[in-house]
Image (cartoon, rainbow, N blue to C red):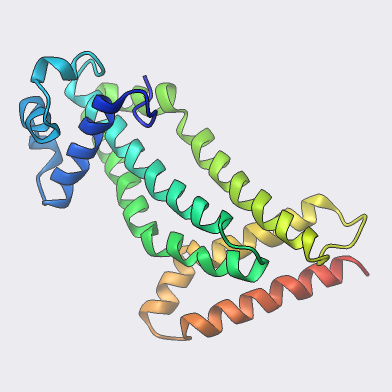
Length: 208
């Protein structure tokens, strides 16, 4: 069962309940199934129609939260038309990256405490595959926009193009940008303008 599917509304309600309790600063390790079910508006017994244990509820809720944050950023980027607009929209992903990182850090800590947690993450959700699939979606959309604007010359090495955009995304959502922003080294506007110029210049260079 995957709790991000629309045809499992009660499972989604459970995942949303866990996230709400987390936002209310509730200790995730102290949550009970009864408390989660009450917050979700369903009976405790109903939760076991979708989850086998508290550990599974917590693991799947955190992964659900991760997916929800990234899905929102991906959809926002797709709604933009130009490459520059798409790049700028990724700042939304940068702004929620700390929440994403906290989800992942929490999963790692809980995996060490609860034996089954790691199994839920790796086997049920294939975490690495999830992360890669999101990166691929971002890259495909950015590269498609660059092709439409004829910024990529015919015959340009595809791996080179991917490297240019992977580097760009890392510069937007990676730790360096957060540090630069925190220290107020350069404004967000200048950072994005310079980054866009670097991408255009890099793609132009590839065509020489």
